[in-house]
Image (cartoon, rainbow over all chains, first blue to last red; front, side, top):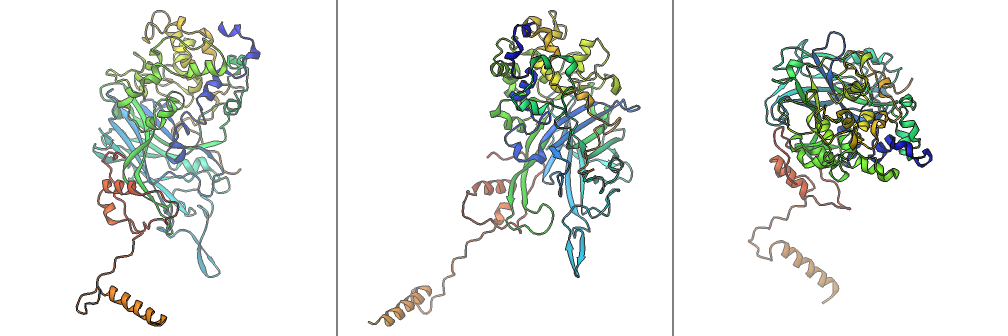
Length: 514
Length: 84
């Protein structure tokens, strides 16, 4: 093995963690990954999941989850983490392989002070005075009387072009309302003694126009499901190589962001609503802001009264496959990527066919000749841009970056899911073909999987006979690390992150106080 | 000419200037309006107008913020962003 020729003392940083450090990987698969998005965290997409529901009885449904607003400290009061009422959050589906959206679910938010805008006041010395907090007592119900501000949202479905296609409102299957309530964030156990039960009251059964089966909808704060070894990474990756190639150490390090929350937009939709003549669908999420914003130097009383926004929607965040803008796209093009559409991804092709990450590792670690040598990297093109033929490639495929899910592949019960997805399933000779990059489940360890892939693991699996159709040059002789590639990990195990057994799958958020 | 006389003469001249030069039958000129610190109505005519106006705002280290209370920005759900 190549690694055995180096003395451990020469390896000051950990290979896999250095990979993450070199890419500036932060607390989610795509968090603060571009210069502009760091200035507007409310529209910063952090993770996108898409998988066939594995909850008993829900196998014919597809769960899509788009997470926003990274690194929420549970104690982040008094305003916590409402979504931006001047933003447009979307989840897009391409079901015919032309790299253009065919379905878009559009989320808009609104914050309203209680009492039709009057707010919650107390009588102090004979005067009505507004309270400074977002709650005035214990909260346990939807539209609770103790809430000083209510956050609501609407969901529209657009078919065809997201700006030009017909738009229809998603409605509550009970009563037909088109405005939904978002639960207040998990302020703490005194304000909300049973947050799990409180949040569960905000899971809606909804009707989506054009779909035959009702769906489920939830928007609210969740415990961040992403797990990563952050501290060690940024401390010059302070771990020996023997550690990150030791499979017994995959969960040896605490998850640095175990105490962070995130906001989730979650839908569980019958697969018949998403597909159109092809079992494979592509998905991604975007967030947009109004093109013009005027700040008010003398805002009146109200909620978020400091700005007036106008103009068209400008996309500022984009996320399909995890880690793309984090570790694939060059720094100078990260803002461009966030504003781009999948149909125009040809402009980013070099970042995939000729990735810099393995070469950065060679430079940063002084480890020459460890990067795969098959150029162009057809294995990465397959993983990120087209899907794997016979697994998650659409009948008509247009090379473009998005998460692709084969809705014909049955889901696997949580306990039997392979944390390394397709790669792990191949290695284990197992029966779990429902994992990343065939969609993405919360349990899939995308950091380890991506590390294995970028350092040549797919070419190892492709073998000398192009078994996976990744290209004839994508073979073991092009992978200097050889079988050691499969052992790479960052020391944090994604598979042990707590989750719910069913929709919305992501766990109850960390409370602001215990 | 005494100082007092000179001053009175200067004031008189200013008054005549304000009246358009002394013609007793000429209508008084309308004074120039004071500069507005409000976003002009024209900026709400269209999203393009708004973007053009926003782009025309020069950075300033000393100006006071524009008054926007009475301004309603135009929005569009269908237009593509303007090129800036």
